[in-house]
Length: 484
Image (cartoon, rainbow, N blue to C red; front, side, top):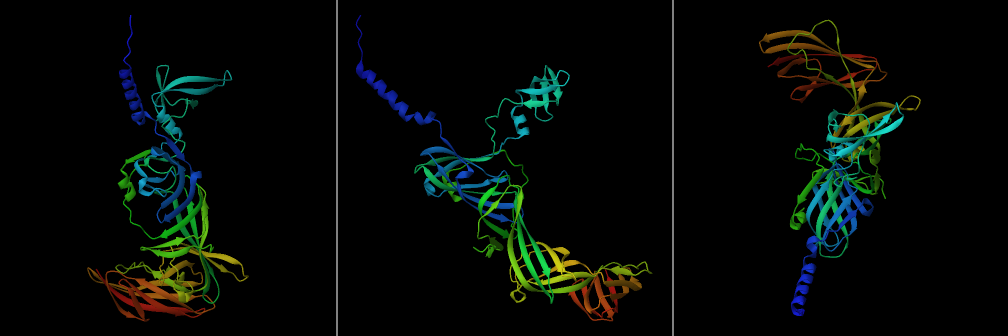
């Protein structure tokens, strides 16, 4: 028998096979996945807003592959808002493109592990106290809620013992991560920026007002930054923004995995230790000129302002209620009204201030007769712009007594009333004082007569300024007509 080989045909087949192997190799080649941990972060900038919202921008370095690849960024907070995530190459610009991004939040928790093994066989470890030994049962997990087991053909809702699982499921992560599928035609080592919004970071302001003599005081403002985001941050370039941003209400559950697919065009569209203050849009921005570390589950206080020898004004004020203008009081007893102690701050340069003050709690301290510092009350101050006033209520005066009595009552018609009042101020101090007495009226009112001058400060409020001598008493009368 004679064997004849057609070498030209064999060579043609070999060439076609080799060509197919080279050209079609990317179709079955595995895409290279690269992790970029928090150790690869070279810079982080953080802007914390009022109302539990923070913008975070990180700069990280990674050794990428040319062509298609997968980049996994770890060390991110569990409170991230995944729909706000954006990535940008600082080395390649628009040449680097992302066509798919994922946020995987299916992290390791006991509940997540049980849900992952629902419908599968697990082990239950028990201690047999009678035989003093461990026993292992095989069970099929039917539901993570309960949990519900099938053991030897019977259904158990809950079962004593430790649950033993064969391993960590592949779909579960030890920590949340961003996953980007990218196309990189350029160099492999690149710096890129990752930005996102997150919850769990907040800030507030606390003030210390040290009262001094001659209507002077020292005011210190402290910023407290709270980190409950689930991760710690080192070397943060920190900025705080005061003001109320409008946000769309969101009633949603944080997803375990968020996936977005987009083309590169859509992705690209997306020394002094005190803070430096500046205006930003319609808000106020405070930037710390040094980097700071924010540990997880911690609070850090930073100095915002210190203003010494500012001018303050102490005010005594009565806020009388608007009751009994339409009805007769149950006569006889005097109606006692507290006399408030208020410190008034003029936030301007002439008073030694002139800085935008974020909202916060003001704690007041003063020295006693022996020169010892004592706590003297606190109040919440609203955010106060420059050239505006702020009033801080310290408490109620002990040695000033205010009383108010109804001395006459007439119902002129079904909707028209006339009442007369006597107000008294007793001063038990060794000095003269002036008290602002505010009467809160309502309806259509007219003051018919008054023994003391008054001013109308609002549509429903009048104010008497009563000077009370030391150890003395001042009495005033007025009559008001009120209609509905």
